[in-house]
Image 1 (cartoon, rainbow, N blue to C red):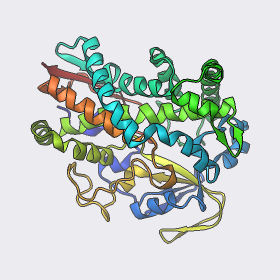
Image 2 (image 1 turned 120 degrees about the vertical axis):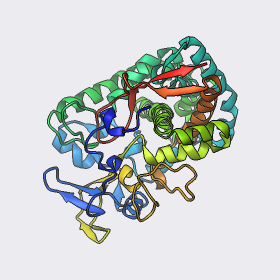
Image 3 (image 1 turned 45 degrees about the vertical axis):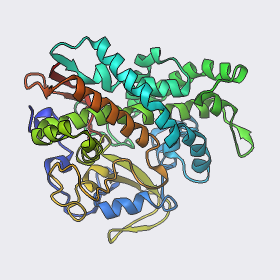
Length: 403
């Protein structure tokens, strides 16, 4: 059992993880030129007002980076505002309806068993490579209608979109040494993914199937069909929404339970507690700790005036530990009621894959607990994390298990 999260090598900028809070809920960092929002009420205000706090940060970044980001991000839901965002999101919402998710339940359970069988587990299980990564990738690939056998390609593309570094803090919107190189890598990977999808898109035009990719190919928005680039970018978003969150949720929930053995024993004995355990894990160790917005006009947040055309970093991890909202916020307490964490954001950009992540997490963890009466981290093999202040993601998570 590993009880001190700092021993995992988590990035030092995640002050909220260490139990400390910012002096003010809203601050300005002159060095980076960014505004930081830490308070829960303040973060909720920013996320719930797309008119004042736009997701289209590309207009502020394009001149600085010197790339045609607007073109590269066509169809990128994360960076769109209404009404375009509303219309495009409507196209993909049907892939995550309660009925679709309910129909997926037996498939997710079957895949979990298959992957654990393939891992040929004896007394050691590397959770990420064996289950936490491939399970959601296969599920979203099947929804899209593209070969799950290409999962390794998906992982490379997905990881290229997640900024990380071994030496510097990385901002979600750039502005760090070596930014141009990282941006070029990201754009190149997206281009590669688009080229990969082009063949499948053309096939769906000729031979439509009952899959999400066919739906996107033949859909119309404002009387026009989507371009190949828009379809590829939407598929890109779904790849991330459909698997990255689940991968992190599974690993982080195991880490939370490992550090709190009493809670681990309770949920093993009563599986109805699993949803509460996952929700508290999402609050306590949110997969993505920060999101960002750009002001469209002068705005007041937490008594602070933010000018127009400013980049605003919304620290979800810090908001999730706001003592004004959560009693004993640094404690892991499943069953908090209410538990209004902001891990999946809020408002129109609420995570489209949240329901799928919760479903996959509940099923996979339930099966893990059934198959392995003992699950614990290995002190001599600590988890390896992607080094970033934006996210908490175990790249590898070795576990000692017994059948």
